Image (tube, rainbow, N blue to C red):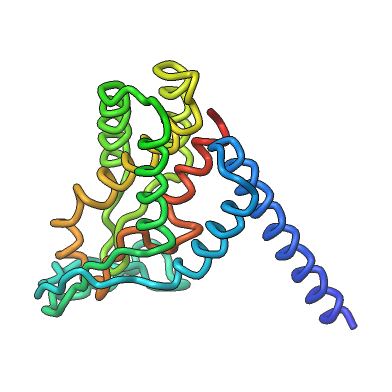
Length: 218
């Protein structure tokens, strides 16, 4: 009986989190000027697209040797993994990269945003993203999720308050895309990861979430 109760509780928690996520997405897209119908299509497209990676090219790589922490052991217990040769496939994720970038192009075409100010914001966030992102052997690139959207929102409110949501979304998405993914492509080749997906985990990836959080805050 207690097992069943815990299972039901966890299911309720997961459903609640999913509902909150959809609610936040709807609010963010509404601030960006999208209709409820368009928002629904984008959410469905992002969820489906998060599991689809489109390969761009494959290259032979040699992962450098590194130490890994042994599970359940003190920090001093490490195992050295020797260098190995293999292939890394560079791919783009539909839900976490192609859809957000497509939205950036759409918002830029629809709004009277100043290109110079937008470029400065993108460069600032890409530099910040590069500084705070880290290359993790065997996995890829990771970075704190809240720093870029916070900076994007502040810059949007300072540089273009009339179009703050769109400005924050574009600068946040493209800044993270450049700083945490594009600028670190050369490093990814030495990490030993079989697939390096730009846009990664779709809905929960830094690129997608950065744009949404930035739009919410702006």
